Amino acid sequence: MRRLSVQLPGEVRDRSYPILIGPGLLDDGATLRNWVSGREVFILTNATVAPLYLARVEAAFSDCRLGTLVLPDGESHKHLGTLDRIIGALLEQRHSRSTTLLALGGGVIGDMTGFAAACYQRGVDFIQVPTTLLAQVDSSIGGKTAVNHALGKNMIGAFHQPRGVLIDTDVLATLPQRELAAGLAEVIKYGCIRDLQFFAWLESNMPALLARDPDALAQAILRSCETKAEVVALDERESGLRAILNFGHTFGHAIETHTGYQSWLHGEAVAVGMVIAARLSAALGMLSAADADRIEALVRAAGLPTAPPSDLGAAAFLDHMAVDKKVVDGRLRLIVLDGLGSAVVRGDIEQGVIVATLLAAGAPHE
Image 1 (tube, rainbow, N blue to C red):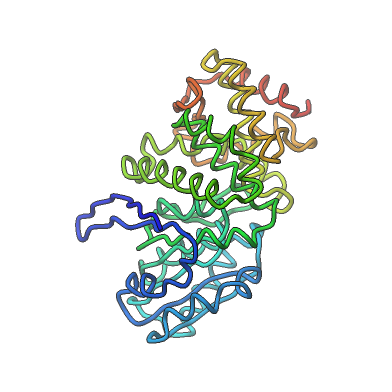
Image 2 (image 1 turned 90 degrees about the horizontal axis):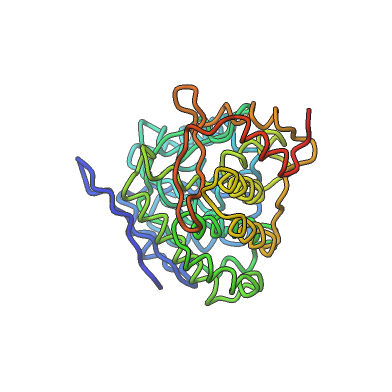
C-alpha cells in the first residue's frame, strides 16, 4: 500500500486528507471506519458496482446506522433530479449533520455524492472509494463536486473535500476495457501538462497498462495521484495553476454536451480534446508538430478516439464552449502546452485560430 496526502490547511481544522493506494483495500474496514467521526453512514453506489463491492464496504460499518442508495449507472443520470433523490433519501432515513456519505463508484457517483455532502444540512463529511481508473486518478481527488446541466457539463456544484480517498487497485479487474481506456485519457493528461518523463514512460508501457499489468497500473495511478495532489495543494479552488488540470476538457465537455452525455464517455471526449488542444498549441507556435503527433499517437495507442463527432461543427463547438467554467468576463480561457510536459492558461487566443484548428481536427463546416 502507498499513502499520499493532499495538504489543505483550514481555519477551523486541518483539511488535509490521505489517499491510500493498493490491492485489497476494500477489505480494510478499520481505515474506512476511522474516517467516520459519528455513527451514521450513507453509501451511494450504482447498479453496476453494488453487486460487486457493496457488501464488502458495508461490512466496515457494522456498528453504525447504515443507509444505502443504489442509483442507475451512467453520466446521463448526473443531474439535479438525481441530487434531489439523494437528499430525499437522506431526509427519509433521518440522517443528521453527523452523517458521513460514502461514494462507491466512478466519477459520476463520486461527483454527485460530494455535491450532496456539500449541500445536505449545509455540509457533511464524505469519503471517496473510486472503482474506475478515471475516478481513481482524477475525479476522486481535489474536492470538485457537481452535476451536469443540459447546457453545460458540471455547471452546478461546489468545492467540498473528502475525508479520505481509498483506491483498491484490484477493482480494475472487473472494469470494462472501454472504461479502462477512458481512464487512461486522464493519465495521459498528467504527462502532457506536468511530467515529460511520465509521458515517455506511458509511451513505453501502454501495452502493459491495456493488459492490466498490476505493477504498471499501480505506477500509473500513483504518479497521477501525486501530480493531482501537488496541484490541488497549491491551488485548491482553481484560481490559477489548477486550471491546467483541464487540459483538453473544454473541447471534451463540448463533445459531451453535444451528445447529451449519452454516447461518449468522459475520458473519450477528453482524449479528443487533448488532441485538439495539442494541435492548437502547435498552431500557436508553442508546441512542435512532432510533439503534437506524439500526443495523438499515445491517445490512439490507448484505444481512444482522436477526432470529434462527425456532426459537431466548429460553430457548435464554440457555442458549447461559451458555456464553460473556464470563461471569465466573457473571454474563453484554454489550456495549451508550451512544450510537452508543460501547460499554461491562455485567454487571448483568436477565434479564427481555434476555428481553423477545429476544422483541421475534423469538425465539419456548418
